[in-house]
Length: 109
Image 1 (cartoon, rainbow, N blue to C red):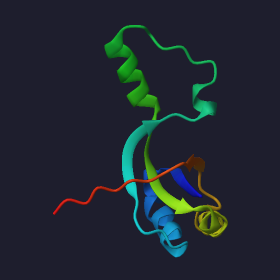
Image 2 (image 1 turned 90 degrees about the vertical axis):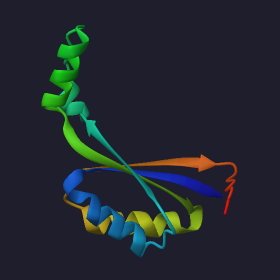
Image 3 (image 1 turned 120 degrees about the horizontal axis):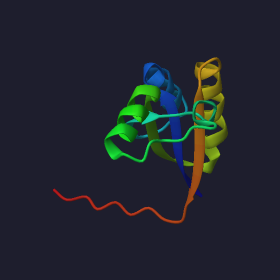
Image 4 (image 1 turned 180 degrees about the vertical axis):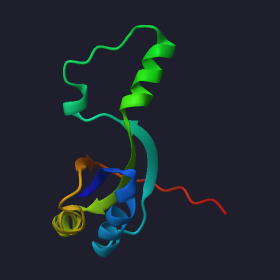
């Protein structure tokens, strides 16, 4: 079975995470930059309902982060997670695993 693996890291750790994935044998990945808040930052927080103020507050208190996505076989998952723990052991990261029922790639020349 294939798994869609997402790794969320702070921007300064994206190189470490990609190196860990490469060591684990991935064949490709995608990145999405975003602004994120951890549960500790968000706890008990209420946002002003004015859209401009809400966006400004979120931008002020959130952190730059990157979501790295890749599709891997279940067999590689344990090894990849081992490399991630080794490379990012003292850094903040989150891993999500989403089972995939099928993959279809349309290659057009």
